[in-house]
Amino acid sequence: MKQIVGFLGAAVVLAALAACSDPLNSDCSTLHAYVAVVALDTSHTPVSGLVIADTVIRTGEAVTVQQINLPAGTYVVFDDGSKNSIRPTGDAVRVVGVLGPAQFSATFVIGMQGCHVHKISGPDTVIVQ
Image (cartoon, rainbow, N blue to C red; front, top):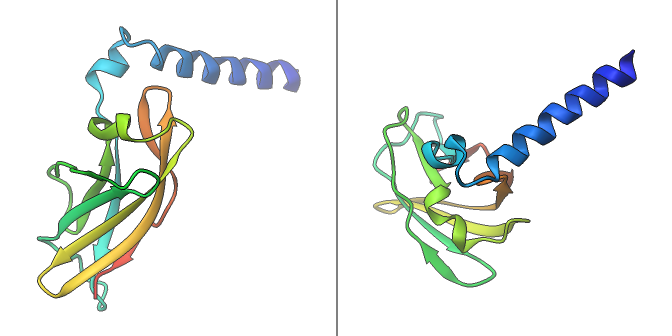
């Protein structure tokens, strides 16, 4: 019985991923995925007002990421609008956030999951110093 449940669960996941790879599927056309990070100062207070700059390390391409209304100190570091800049299997992206003399720098590996970007690795939180 456990094998049947496991097989059905795997089939549902595969079907969902296959549906997402279909550009006519509403999930691909209506959802806009992004990868975010929380920026804190050394006192662990959210930092607002950072300017975020991305560079795809493999190509040296600078990528502009639009910020959206997220909780204080939370920033979009990569989104579906830039998915053509990375390989589906993943690319390292250097992210720098700057506010006056304070900044953070972190490397994320961003790939594709179906038709949307997702974080393969990278920090959830960064410290701005």
